[in-house]
Image (cartoon, rainbow, N blue to C red; front, side, top):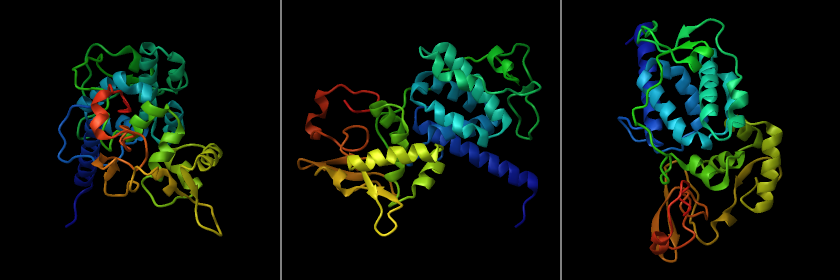
Length: 302
């Protein structure tokens, strides 16, 4: 049965908003979702999509701003800068406003300086939209940071709807790896290698939004470490997860169907990914009976 263009637009918008709510809820935003997210969340791509589609849901937009106040240290700023040109001017203007806002609050303001310099809109426009695409009525007072970037909205008020990302479970795996190892492209590469049998380095670069040369240099180091290895001869131009990484602790890497069991000293528990890093959702370095001895951290490492 044929549907009108208006019905199609509304359906796409509603499903995208449902996706956004599901993924943000999985990493710390309080909200209702009809289904549970089981895949690894890509926080940079999710943020940029939210700055585009989230204009139709002010409640989601502001909840994400609260989440950023707590978790922005674990975002890859360079990756945001690389991905931003693929999105529209309103998303880039919103990202610039958010970066300026975070720079004022952060102890490392220089981290956000380049993003805060992203060009705003040439003419001021309302930030939020109604379901039919028309502008939401504007209040008398405006948020000055967003207005500086050409977006008109009411001053931001917090509602206590966000919390630090969870330190267990598949959706927050990338964020937890960054909390454990630091914010670097190695974390994105580890997640990508763990979700596929093998992949070409150029495709890795495209999927994680990084320069091919940078990815190639990192992969060379990772091959030296034994974490990954080149594909089979004769081409040897693909990368795959190294079976040697099991370290006698993990049975197999993560596939397309979510967590796999992890075994350590005869004890079994659910693990998010085959790898010998306890608590980052990968695998316990120590037996689960000892896990209560250590304090928990953002990464889940201890």
